[in-house]
Length: 184
Picture 1 (cartoon, rainbow, N blue to C red):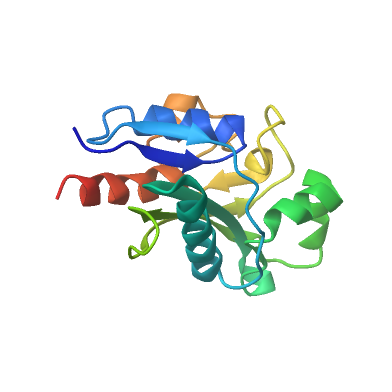
Picture 2 (cartoon, one colour):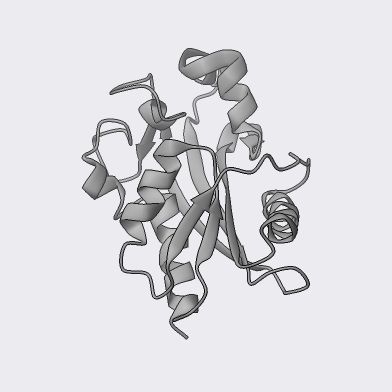
């Protein structure tokens, strides 16, 4: 059997989603919370740096994830810094940021970085779900899910049944690319 991959996260909701989506993964998945340095850069740069650092700490196969929420009106911001925007302004603040803009479109972007261990290449898998920023609807507690309405749906991520979300989301799209890579 192939060596288990350690998914590095301290976010219990994210872990549940990844475990549900990767339930039939060709490689076993474990998890570990590691405080990794939060670097500044592009979505891809951040994911790669986090992955290399995690591989050193775990000394084996690792998977890290970085999520971004990019507003079209803000030319991609808040992007990978959405976590700090949410902490600072919350759901209402995200909507207020777009109050003077007609264009409320956004992209939910999930970037997974995988590495077999220290010294190995980092592989990047990204999923992008277009949508709109709307006033918060549904249960709060999982980031910006209540104010992201995915394109083609009438429910925000927070309002959706978890099984449905786990078959359309940006995270799902990225993990399907990872699964395909792992089965090669």
